[in-house]
View 1 (cartoon, rainbow, N blue to C red):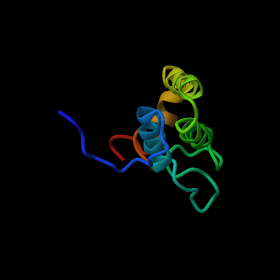
View 2 (cartoon, one colour; view 1 turned 120 degrees about the horizontal axis):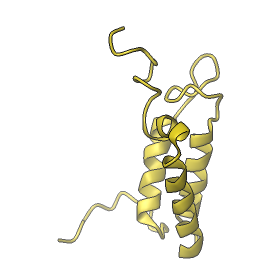
View 3 (cartoon, rainbow, N blue to C red; view 1 turned 180 degrees about the vertical axis):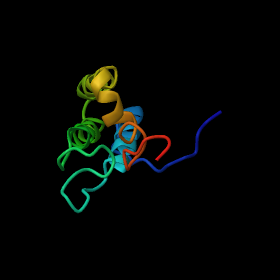
Length: 101
């Protein structure tokens, strides 16, 4: 089956990397009133945001550069301390509340 979804820019070389970058950019989208990322609570701009910006730029470069950036992105996701920053909003959600708060 062929996908007809044309939401990606035409100059994107690595579509998977571009989509992953868009997901992370959407999560780590803005600072709160204290200058911290609303998703992970790190100082703005947070490291996941900067990584996503680099991945988005790399997705438009020749495949060797995009491939390297994709492995950098996925390699950081495997690190235990980065899982919350890259894949989830803090430990229990965007407000870092416990499950029973």
